[in-house]
Amino acid sequence: MTEREGGTVLIVDDDREVVRTYRRYLDETYTIREAYDGEEALDELDELDDDVDVVLLDRLMPGPSGGEVLDRIRDRGYDVRVAMVTAVDPDFDIVDMGFDDYVTKPTTRDELRRTVEGLLELDQHAIDVRKYHSLLVKAAALRDGKSTYELDENRAYTDLESRISDLEAALDDEAEQLIDDSRFVATLRAIDTAATREDADG
Amino acid sequence: MAEGDARADRYPLADALPLDLADLDPGMNVLVSGPPMSGKRQLVFDLLAPEGVPADPIVVMTTDDPASRIRTGFEDRGLRFDPATFRVVDATGAPGDSEPAVHRVSSPADLTGMGVAFTQATEEMGTPDRLRLGFVSISTLLQYVDAERAFSFLHVLSRRTSAAGYLGVYSIDPTTHEDRFVNVVTSIFDAAVEIRDQDGDRELRVRGISGVAPEWTPFPY
Image (cartoon, rainbow over all chains, first blue to last red; front, side):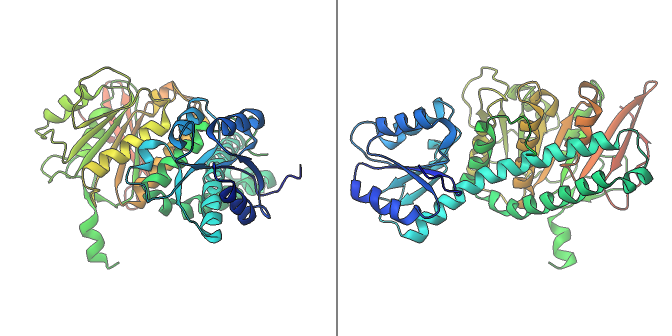
């Protein structure tokens, strides 16, 4: 299987035509996996473990519904962002249900791509905050017992400082989006479910 | 925004701090740090509901004192425990009856749950333009999640309230953590209020606020 740089998207819908359409919208950028009901979706996740980044989950399917599949995804602690795909505008709170976003059918190529991109940004935000933390820890370690003069002369330290301020600016740019409740909660969920990485700095 | 307009949005402090500091900017996040029994919880409450100032809507997120104690703390200050203007996100895991002003989260380890509870609290208060968020305490949170996760959570929560123009006040006991962690977590905040005990005399200093010198000032009980 060829891995796309963009990440892996699992499309779950009992309507094969819908799955095919979404695949066409997305497959130039993302690695696509398909499932035609909830059980299959969970099997795919099981098999691929943390290799799935985004799940597009049809709300109404024969067998377990999108909501039930979602509950099991959350129970099992998969580090995956999930958008509900629904025929009607959800008249309930997607925050309470545990979805990260939703898409209304029929959707357009642009809308679907924007949704997937937005969900991947949540992971990126979680990674960036973690990286920011690890850089701050490193800077604090370098500062220990050194004078300001020594630090200014220290190439590693000044590099670190500039990476820190770059990340800080990037994170602050995204802060405005956190006003949106579902975005805010989904960001926290991305932090919650992320496996602790030994070296977030890469 | 014109200077005059900005002024109206600020959060008055009255006499909460023994300093020449009348108010704080909207969107600010303040860290209150002090050893056990130094009165930092009291100071957090003072910053959330300064005496003699019309009360802003308040949400207190707690990981150590159960909602009932938070409630008593505020009622003692003459504040009405009205769910329209005052809510507690209780993540202590302590059992309690269901009441409209209390949003329970099973454990401080449930960061998503705390976020959901915060959005529910503000939504049910009618998404106010002004709000003071208290968080007690970072030290307890760290008993449940690793430093990286705690940091990430605090970063996201503080940026959320900042973007909304709210005031955030968080407490930490620096004596229970490595200096390095305290330094790192402090960088999330715009300003830090430190409390210390000098041979039985309590002192306080503020860092990060322009025009206020970071000098130790007596802060009697």
